[in-house]
Image: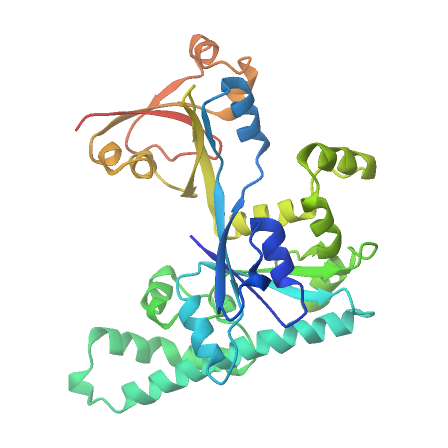
Amino acid sequence: MEIGIIGLPQSGKSTLFEIMTGVNSRDAHGESHVRGLATFPDERFDHLASIYKPVKVSPAKVPFVDVNAQGEKAWDALRQILSGADGLVHVIDGFSATEVAEVLSAYRKLEDELILSDLIVVENRLAKVGKIPPKSLSPQDQAHLKILPSLKDHLEKGLPLRSAGLSLEDAFSLKSFSFWTIKPELIVINTGETNLALADIFAKEAGLTEPAIGICCQLEADIAALPPEERKEYLAAMGITEPAFGRVIRAAFSLLNRMCFFTVGEDEVKAWVIPVGTKAPKAAGTIHNDFERGFIKAEVVSYADFVASKSSIAAAKQAGKLRLEGKEYVVQDGDIITFRFNV
């Protein structure tokens, strides 16, 4: 799992990357990209850590990559760097803008470049496959000849591939192309401190199906620089429940259809990241391959039932809230699990 952060120069993307990960990519002179990990803000995890007081705490992490490729082959370099990215955070400058039209223009400028870049890839592939004799076409070639013409029409209309209604099978067959606009995208508007509502207005004007997030990177950088206790006092004084960058991390996490389950104990409390819809054996495999191979049962209590049982596994068991689940159990967000296995 990895999320690329993209944006025009001076959009605030590198500042946002630094706020979330603590890595200053602007000091990485000459580097085309910088990677960093953001801690997923989760009150459930914090509560579990406070109950067990373990030797080690391991919250969920969200990997981000800040890209800064330049030159004639910048798009080729960026495509290669972000080939493994599962989603994009598109940061737009709303700080210096005075009207929504300016923000829309900045959004379209980069979005159109991404669409054009994907269109060139499609056209090149169609031209190459078109030169192959019909009898020599591989199954993959035939699949591309079937799918790509409609994608070409879609891109020529100025529409991203994520809106093309591709099936999972078709999307998988196109994975090797590393298309930009097939990846899910989160829009973040870097606004002034008093103009956060600009993001909602932008989302409506742009016709987005998902809400855009407004954030003042300058203010968030100041908040992130504060010691933890001072940060809490400042947020409380401002009437803010959490920094906006926490919402960006959470939204990016959700964008990729991910969730967490927890393992707890005095040695370690850990959040494990898995795709939504993962069954118990596959979830066990995120801890160790042996757990998946030798899976027997999963002892499960939901986080809500745990809290309702006075934050005690023993009390949850006594109340009948601790369940034994088998191989077909689909893990739910916030489950606290102990796996039984035999290898």
